[in-house]
Image (cartoon, rainbow, N blue to C red; front, side, top):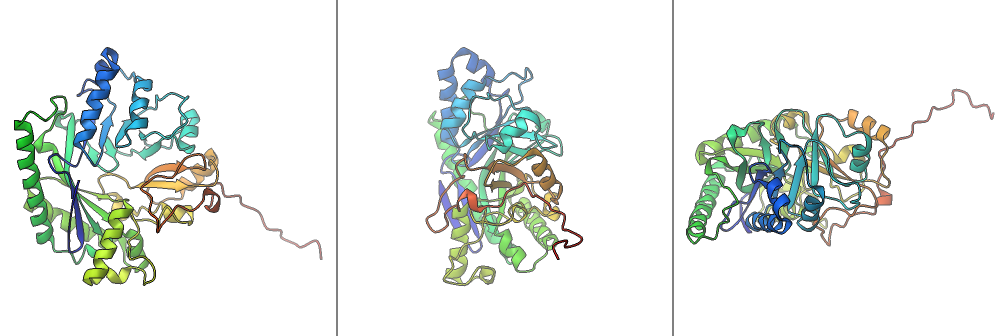
Length: 387
């Protein structure tokens, strides 16, 4: 992995391959491979993961609908960079560990699947439109022009308070330079026969990702989300015209990148440093666009997803909700009904470990300190009969 920074942005790329990608299970013949040999299947998965440091998302779209749960669960448990996306959860009930799997449905999961979701076994993506909204990757149309794979050249992360001040030309030149390096390195790799034949790559399906972070500081400064949406749209269109490829907009929840951008703003004296907390607090932006999920705060502040950004982002932001107990079905539905727009949600009750990475200066608060999703309302007495 390589990291390149500029005034107000950080670019993450791989050295000789795309940064991240998505694949369909039908296009890779995974079902037949698992039937033939589980070891051959695991080798193909290992080759896939070695190419994409930013992770790989697999869309389970086999027409048969059958899913060899045991083999897939073994891969998901031991390869955290691999994520599985399904319409209907067919994972076995015996697994009590959190799997990097996501169920895509318009409404929250119900029944036994909903119970497992609230226990933190997998996440839920509110799929309100056709296709697949893959967290960290982007939106894949239902047909996708017959393609069975796609890739990201890299991710350019920008703090929300810096979008209006950003030099779009400097960012575009940096992205062009990084893409040129990647393509030259990939040509040498393919020429040497070191690119796995089972891993497809289509250049016309490769895009750049523009990720936002520091949304909490943006909101605390009194700025309007509608203004941010206009600024991000203008930046995205400008980058797309210069790069001659698709640019998708998303949200970065990586605390390391948010911290680097905060340190950069302070050390270089950039205008958007005023949005950061004053010393002795750590000069770091809050990852994502909501409150820090590692710190105790109301549930509503950790799932902020403005409606003005919902139509702009290619995929909903991921929210890890730490709670003191497994939320009930009724409490979860009431909580979700009060949200302006629905992010991708993964519950973290006490039995589930928090999601990494972990930082020494920003540890996760204990689960017992967080508020729960089951709010108990009480009717105040009209008269005080004790008087």
